Amino acid sequence: MPKKLHFAIWLLLIAVFSCEDTEIQNNIRVLVTGNVIDQNAQPIANANIKVYADADAFGADRVLLGEGVSNASGSFNITSLFGPNQLFLVDISSGAQYSTYRYQTNTEEFTPGDLTFDLQTVALNAMTNFTYNIIRESGESNTLHYRFTYFDANCTEVYEEGVLNESLSYCNNTRVIGSTLDDASPNAENISFVVPLQSQVEFAYRFNEGDEISEIITVNSADYAFQFSY
Amino acid sequence: MRFNLATKILIILAFGFQLNAQNDSIGQNKKKSKIPFLFDEERQYLGAMSLIYQSPVPYGDNFIGEGFEGKGGYNFKLQVYVFKNFFVGFSYGFSHFNNINTELLGGYTESSVEEISGVLGYEFVPLPKVRLGVNASVFGNATLTNSIQSGYGNRDFGKLRNLGITLEYEFIKNLNVLLEYNWRKIKSEIEVPNELKSFFEEGTYNTLNIGLKFNFGNEAFVDKVSF
Image 1: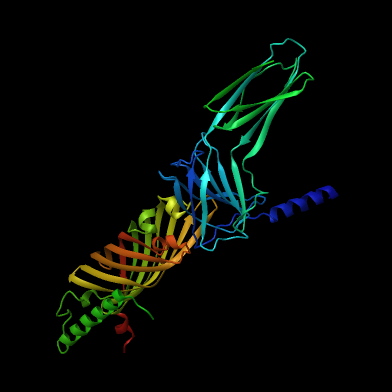
Image 2: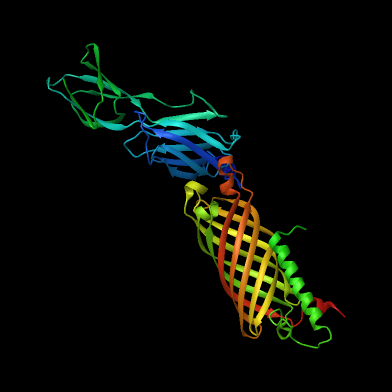
């Protein structure tokens, strides 16, 4: 048998036998509780809360342990199954018009003493489409380098033994989208990305080899449309 | 050996009636009791075996009452008449439920309750072919198998309490059709936060049953072993 085939079989065996199933413990429930508000501190009713466990290993499934919705005052109390896994996730969302939130911890290392995961107050931002059109009017051979910098309102908070680890978390990060327009592609038409409503977007551009110019755009209406010509 | 109050009352009543009936019949060579509904020696059996379909009906402000919807189930019961119509036995069965409130119970869709217990009871004979029985469980255990997704699930354990009444009609010799009502309580061992303790510490449901009972033997156990 060729050595390479031998090696591949060994690798396959190691992969198969290193599989770890997502574990659901017998005889236990936990409570996931909190309150969902929007960017104006108004309660969000009927926000979806889903609790997952995931062994985070080859072949392991993400298993839904519990689910429910927030009430009229934005609060929720979800009874969930529980197990010791690499990932214990609580996902909160309220349709496409709001940002999402994820609580993440490792329940192999941590089980709260009172069997309660209190997420306290979770703020979801209203989101909207930001659509831009950049049209060349200055004739051939002109080039525009541009970029938009905006906030990503979707948030993942990672907790270790009940304490927030900010370096592993991903909240209020900035995102950049941009390109270069030239003779091959002179216009950018109807390109969209999603931003928090009432947030600011920085538009920076450089015409040919000139200096970079930037301007701040406040997204103050739903389905915001931005027009620019060069 | 610990019995609940209902079981103790049942045992005392059964033995009390029997002793009373025995005293009355001393010196009177009768086949039937002076209190005729207590027993009928023409229909004395050694034991019986029942196969039953059961329909569970959850109730109460607890995890079964609020979160489950009954689907059906089966029960098998073996009983031995120790003395006259006082019997001891063994009961094994399943009750199946849908989880209709995952927000209250957890993210599983179905639950099957495996019910195992010893049984004590007494059967009265108000009419020649009719039996009216009462029974209670002893040392009952319940295992709830919760199904989450294909291949995933967990189990909850608890102590089972059961009180039942039966109505039987012997339509063929040694074969009875049986109707039964049971009250069941599972005292669960589920570990939960303090806020959920009262909700999860016990679950209650009734079962309405229909089945067949096969009788065997023609004398009670004490008569069979006495010389």
